[in-house]
Length: 286
Image (cartoon, rainbow, N blue to C red; front, top):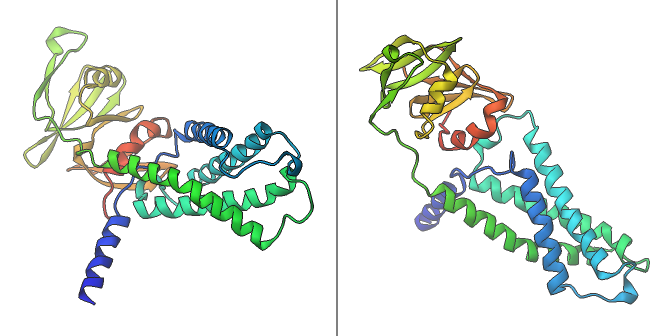
């Protein structure tokens, strides 16, 4: 019993671990790639056979139907999930959720393939339990290859070490040389745009210090591009992700809490595709 409990705890940890959510800005690309792979796989290898006397269309058209159906299902499924108002999907995506949703998607694809039989096969006796079982079996057997690839690809990326701050001094150039200054990367918390100026917030021991600098946020962001921990999250805000302590809100509007600041920093939808991969790594237990 103790060994069973130990194994159960290990599985719980594995399935609750963070997993990259790739169905937001990459959804269309993934669906197109999926369509091409499925079509080529069916057309080149003919895994389920083909009898011209039993099909309405030639094999290429039949493969086109069988490749379009899963592509549409995947696109619609994750599009609805992305637009769900149930919270920040990407922020709490785990290996367990990835596996569960892929199993559900494969079931829907198998169901669609079952009803598609009436369109591509001649005859009348298509909608039977045995045919449903056959379609589900075929989809899960073929789909398991894609599932294994997606899980392995995602695990490879999540195994990368987290971004850490580079404790160095960065010279910042402004429009006038006398206003140039040095930014200590480990002390920088966030910057807020004030027209052609910025409010620069830095951590001095345990105190948050505010300085007015004569530089635009766009210019500052351009000079910090080589430091991946500094991210533009709003037209008026640039934040050091290493100082984020809490994330609230959902995909309609995240709010960031940073070290020592009472102000909540917004994440606009414009910058969400850039910021979202970082949100996964920055996930905290709420």
